Length: 265
Image (cartoon, rainbow, N blue to C red; front, top):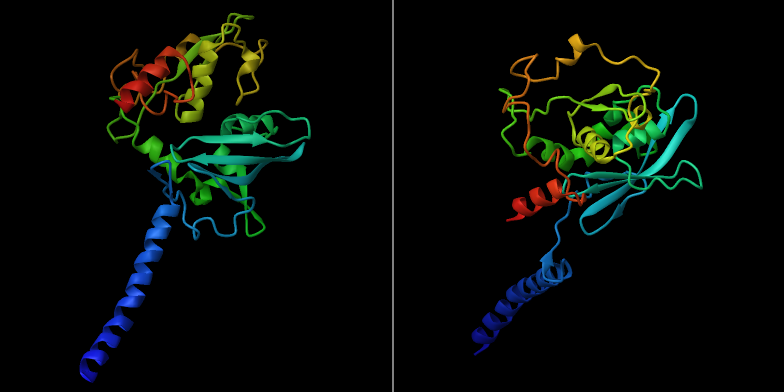
């Protein structure tokens, strides 16, 4: 009888911690569920350690960021990183600034940065009290994955997604201006410019171009960045019919809406 009691006590001591552990596991899983959808952690605590202004949302994280102009100083803002790979910046350079949905490239220009078009190096994050280029942090992990896994047939021989340069004519001076389409930000700039029936030279966010500037020579315009042929007039390598780099889920135009709907199907 004593042996049975001893074995029962021993079994209870062994199983109790296991039951408690399982109970805690269930509680943790339940706490991570909301409306039947399980949340996943975008970044680990280790990845975001010592980053200033950190705030976690359902499918995004926010951190303090900024861009420095030698003339105007620091423009401080909030960078929001979404699980989809999209990046959104709300500027706080002045108390009255209402720019709250800027792309990194647009924020770089808005800040007055002299050497634009290098936003990955020019936009900084505060890590352990120091300004660190965003490219040297884990925050571009999903942005890089978006670029890497963008679908579509427009891939060069090395596997990289390729969009050729496009041109748009100014409604004031009638000159054509070049748009580079090497990233999501650049594709969005061209996409929005194309939809603007009153688009003009001064609307370009990353180059200080005015109607007084000369138009590109015709001999130069034939080079549009195709990886197959420098003077290509359009092929399946450089002409994209829709991918995650040049179509946008937050845009309500018919082209983007159709792509988003078909991608989810």
